[in-house]
Length: 448
Image 1 (cartoon, rainbow, N blue to C red):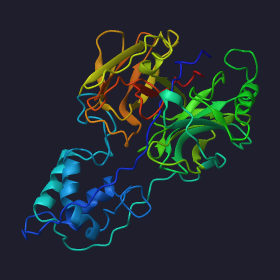
Image 2: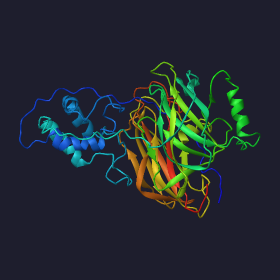
Image 3: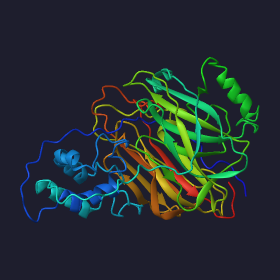
Image 4: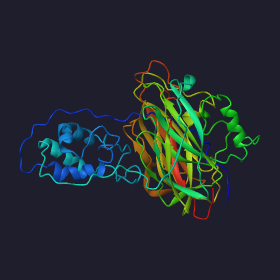
């Protein structure tokens, strides 16, 4: 069965700044026989939950697999883990607001043990040799890259320090494959603030049916023929018809492997259009050559679809525009939709497998609610302390069934206390969004 796109795709912008930790004051050891030690007690926790980033070659600024580097930071490590700032798992844990795969988050017992280690003097214990867990990567991934590109500020008042640029990248496939995961390798982490990738049939008709996608993309490129790519605040560019959006990357996101046996079909005559948001508010324009590494499989159990939307951004097109009032420590924006409103036919039930919440720098709290049958809402994802620099896709432990009768509601809570003027929605990092992406799977016998 075929049916229209499930939701108008309105994509968000993100900012990237790897969180850099500063040294804590040195801890004076207090030799207590019962105090936890680094090697016997906390190193196994670090190796399981932290060292994938905190090692040489990782994105974190120091190693936690090295006692001499970890000990001077013991106070900071205890504070950051107690406040659940690190490791960066933003969703509320415990199951009261959604049942998620919390395997990367620290348990209460692990947080308590790290605190005891610090209070006990951050003792070393008996040194042992252990293997350093590898930096997560996709084995045998299929790499495609954009050409080298130097962005320039080109966004106007809704993206004041930004450029959104799309690049048509051949997949170089000889036969049909299914995307089952991905990793994004930014060429310039200082300015690459999000990457989205869309599957596009260049020979298919455009959204308005007036020409082919290839003709649309050629026309968009002709607006700046001396530069690679074309401007694209809207998906793969205005009027480009998109088959699917299998890649969403923002700062903090690592390797993604689709849950639930799902995959997205990629035919050999399709191209991947990569939309890259460059932000230059805090860094000068510089060359970038970002690579997308795809995990491909010859088969899939279920076809994946992606439900995406942002009604705060939508108010730019459907006035009155919802500007956030300045000078307040809590400004909330709520929007909702149903399966029927986004075009899901009666009789089809999706399994929602994962949640991706998104706001910009003024974001404070975020709540995702769900109603399976159009009745009362259930809390299915809550962020109590939003961190713009650490974003990720969160897999549900138990999928949420979503039908034409189902609804979901998103509430974004912003802090505008430092602003003197209203904050407009927009694509730039200095504007705001209230975005959600749901990763879902169709029944095994249904095609998108």
